[in-house]
Length: 248
Image (cartoon, rainbow, N blue to C red; front, side):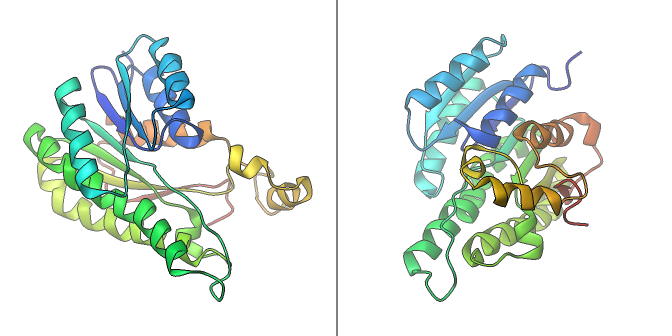
């Protein structure tokens, strides 16, 4: 039997990148997939087709994860379409990196709202559903930067550190109903965004990592499968680093 058979997963920001890799990996393990991104466009439709080819139910939804009311709307729609939500992956995120002395209020607010407020929005919206089901797994995408900080990323680091505090608090509140909350802290992951970095920068990153390579979205997705499945049924309130040993 597949690890996520008969489960429904909701993954935010999943038309591409790490979110898409998680959606595909979950589908390979038998999960039905509801996923969101800001717009319904070619990327969303292509991801939908790719997942549908794996033989599971799938639907993409346009949603502004930073908007509380819009999040409630889309979660209600997903619950009606899929009947249940067993797994939530809060993956939606952006960066607006710059030194603190140059950072604008808009750059701060945008990153906090998309990265951190979205976790509150979606967790709040799915809580009654998982509470009624008496079970569920919530996986929040943090970052090694949320643990150790990084220059020119005060906004991003604060958002990802906030996710860790939120995860631990929610785990303590909702454990009584069998709802688990955990966070993944990826390190240097090779995505469309990081691929645009100069080769010498990527090489320097890899050299600083004990495993001597950047991670892949699939590396992160494999950790997410563990946290989503019953293999981790006694794991809650934890932060799992997926960073090749760069943060120990």
